[in-house]
Image (cartoon, rainbow, N blue to C red; front, top):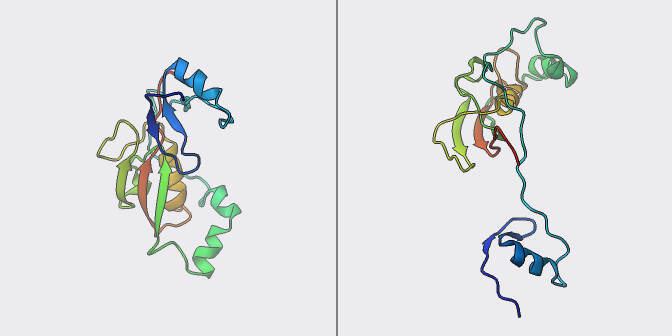
Length: 161
């Protein structure tokens, strides 16, 4: 019987994340009950660059086309539904809480990345964009009256190997 000194991280689907040496991984890969092994890898996001400004672009045509496509203005006016009283869980690259379209919309923030920063931030911009699409004020979001609980689950690196 092969004995391994490995670190095990349970996952909700496969329960199979490990940290092991190359030789241990080779031995594990050859076991009859192992289908395949895949190394963890970094997923590189597109860096916003040094000139990135999270301030909103001025909307020139009223409600964004994406909200028009899903008939949000009709839901607001005819059904009188705007998300008021709803709390949405938002998992992405974080959130720039000071963005004018998100003022007062973020109830809680938790950084699940190794950085574990205690205050809301978005080191890529995508999370702020999608948060705005959900609850952004001034016609930007589809559920203007809703609030967010934000979990930062993506960490971005300048370089990837």
